[in-house]
Length: 224
Image (cartoon, rainbow, N blue to C red; front, top):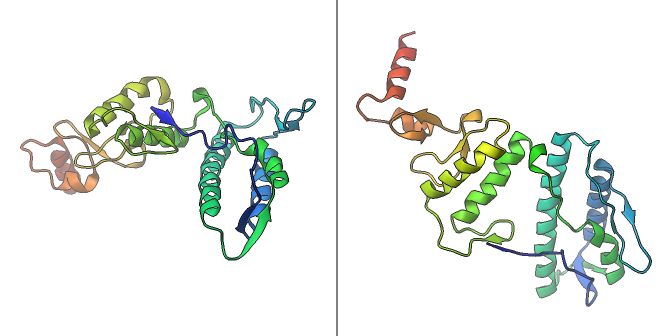
């Protein structure tokens, strides 16, 4: 697989950028929110650039850490794409972002990694959705598959293999029959049929397989 680096190796801006009015304030507000929520501090050693101090987020609840990390990581990729766009086409109504401005943002323009043992159920689903999309040949979060894409069934089997080690919240991810996305039985994303496997509720109502256990179950429920 290949990974885009985004801001990981950025040293600064080579020239002042014209960005939409309000962009700089929005960036500052986002960074302040993240640093406050996760109790992140900055430090500077001699002439080296300022950076976030090492932080294990040990006193941050898992749900807060996962929520902030997901929002921040999505925002970081979005901002990178926006800056590239504004470099290529300047906005009509703009303010100037200098290298000095950018240096102030740079310590926070990094994605936050959450250890697998701290993943919430929702965060697990989102990470597996990214993995599934990549394996299906669709670039996601800057990650691309460098070999032939897997089929829905193959990709689902890989997710199932990882679930033994990562699915701590029993989300039971699977790809519903005739679809190309991951769903969880936890929130009713699919029904399980002994004959059809994972299948959406709507599709299961149309199942015509002889002896379908779901159809039998539905019939018994209707009698009650």
